[in-house]
Length: 584
Image (tube, rainbow, N blue to C red):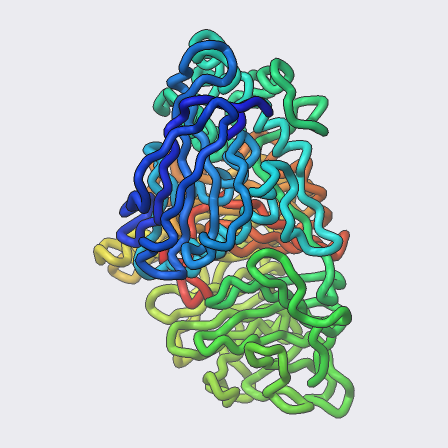
């Protein structure tokens, strides 16, 4: 146990298993509490008491003398150890500010200020993946950044992690009075609670990454024990990891499977799959075959099949007017050499899967929509659905009633069109903005039968986001023709997290924007700063966004052929995404 790289004596060490009774709930003490000796060393063993080999475990270390001759009650640090079944084989573990930062940022959606880590019983995989992501950020053996599991070519913000560790070290290395109070004041968000230990302070910073950035950065220069560290204040305290490999080549849409693996359509005829920690699963050229070509859209279905839109095909396939290529979970083409066509397919650019296994497709070329069964049989007729109301559609999302909603990029004023499952009901609503390019639907109010959710559109040319309420009586109310702020700059992609907050990719701004959701006191109000989030994350023409069951926000960068992961930044979403997002 080290504080500012110095031993902490007499600190209390507790070993916990993560809970499964709710987010931040159900953590259980696994072994008797022990204390560090004069060298900061402790020995603790809970391997014989593991409730199961797969349950993740972690250490909390509290108090102790960091070498100042007195106990510092503000010390609370953390190290994640992974699965309980591996405890007996673990090497020496270092608990310090770096391991604390790595654990808090990756586990933020699952962590309470008390130090309790837990997930719902239905999200064990998301929690395990979050623990695995910690290994990219920090090495628990050495207590340094980055970790040992970083994929080749990936870029981990080690200097930013060290700066955050130095912020905590300013307090940890003291007697716990003046400098700790400065930290706690800077780590108190507007209207939020003031922390009283370093773990709570770290969690507040992770949850409010744009709050008091300069004040927090100034603390990092007081006890700069970890190097290299940032020399100037960052735009925010989000941690973003950039990944390459697996055939990434001008990536478009993103989708996640039930294991948390990330699938991306590459425009130049391939599909990339990365593991939940960014390791390439697809080969160096990506998954190829079938008739993959000019692929923007991609969705993962309930059976883990991956549906990809091919905007144009060779002349012998559907008159060169495009089709759908479908891969199984191992990346093998299962739609034949010619893919799936029919149903009105014409220059398809986007797709979305429904809970019933059907897949909706956006046909940009003739402004129609196609719908396919899970086996690839067309449900829509040869002319597609749309009743001539679609105008240059480019994106689709599905509501809780199985209706598909499309944004009309070519409409004179931004509009959305809804189509019923059988194509018989087609309705268009003016939503404001101009050239909407992305669409997402939340499930706010659906469970209580007080609404059918809300439609959100990313309006490219007006740099805004519109909101429409789907009322329980079937009517539609335009709540806002365009929220602005939060760094919105020609947004393209849009996603909703498990809390209903809205995330948009700023295609020209090289940032992402987060807005408050429909269930907040101020829907559409910016959560990100006026310059957006991630200005230091090397985003380049960010195209699409997707949120996984660990609360990571994944962004495809068309400009650099990379994928960026904002670690633990959002509320988890059940994957694959089928219909509106759900908290798993």
